[in-house]
Length: 410
Image 1 (cartoon, helix red, strand yellow):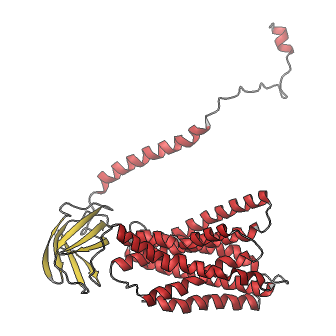
Image 2: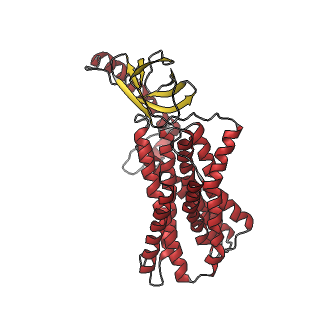
């Protein structure tokens, strides 16, 4: 191209040439680059800080949590977790003011590591024992065994017994409560709102009860792993998960445009929330039974049944205008009650206070999310939420759960 042609080419306004387009940085590099830089800088800081700060002043911080106790003839086995920042080494074991021989935990136990300490100690069933662990620095860590009972062997008969307990306190009571479905279908609109308020009262009591149980367990578990914070983490995770499931089910319902699907959807959410609560309840029952802290006699079984029968009523409440198939009703009952079996297995075979605290929080979060789904159903013809009928139903539900809960206290 000649110089004359070049001069004839139109130029941008102002007589300036447009700058050439710069090469774009790949999107993935804008994300990975800062990450790699952060890792490099933090690694340098860790090395420099470790050399410049020196050792910490003061005595070592030794915190040990007993996560599991297993009693066999002539032996007490404790699963220890180092919950503190410094390594711990057990140098002596004292049981009821008498020095006892032990094996295991011969090496230093690093932070968050676990090891089983086996104490050779004849014990008498039904008596209480206090185990004192003396560390190499002279610190004392105590663990109490309120009632000495041999830990059941994890064989087929043991798991069968735990399954039977879960069926007694979970599946059967929920199924009995669902027998109120024909009555729910025939009630008036105002009475139905009262039943829904009763349902919310039942669920609210379950949520509060689960949180309190979880906080108690969280205080006993590893604080380094979260302690009581695990309960609130479980609440948040369950609420978010169940909200996502609810949105997904609502989308499917909108596509299917099936009549009565809304009631089935809400009943499914209620059964899911109750099932998660029963999972935590099963963990507590299984653990208490295997350690001798709970003797499941006929009276206590009936107490659990009466207490949990109200959960079946909560499930069928939203089904007044729906016509679910018998198979769907069976699936709802199993969804709510069967987790008690799994919970009993977990609690009796591999109980962990931190996991149990999270499970109780998870169940509470699911129940809270379900309550949010049910609240709009309480509105009367004038749009009021807490009208006298709703308030009466809420108080009746809370009172019913409290009264039946007295049968299983102990």
